[in-house]
Image (tube, rainbow, N blue to C red; front, top):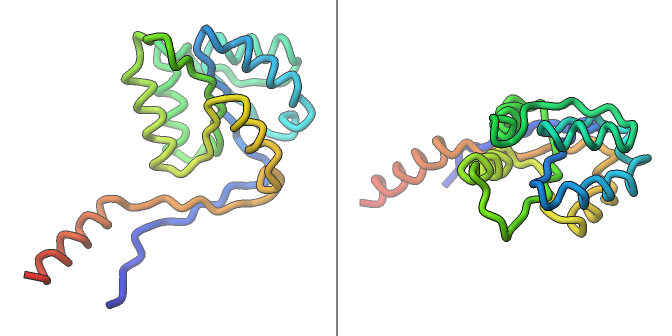
Length: 162
């Protein structure tokens, strides 16, 4: 049985478009991480949600494109750019212990990052591993699954099996 291709390969260039996001209780952690990795990050395009992007740019002197703050639609702006192929990578230091008024937006953003197969770091250790990966300085092909096609294919297989 031959399977129909149910995914698309999308090329990620050597210079990555990286989103920087942090909840209030994690902003200081993200800023310190960016400072420690300033040289490596300076080779990529940075963006982020409102206050986080503004503070990172101010404290590191790196150019960071700022969107709205997360609760004011910034998470959705980042998500739309992931879907458009304009963000390749996300560093999101989220606070696992504080309820966020925009939790549905955060969940949607994490969902979109999985759908579009982008690397996501939610803590310093993961961010360190991702940034030190040889893939950070190379082209890479992400695999974006066509879930609608996959569901149709499985439904057809089920129908054929009857």
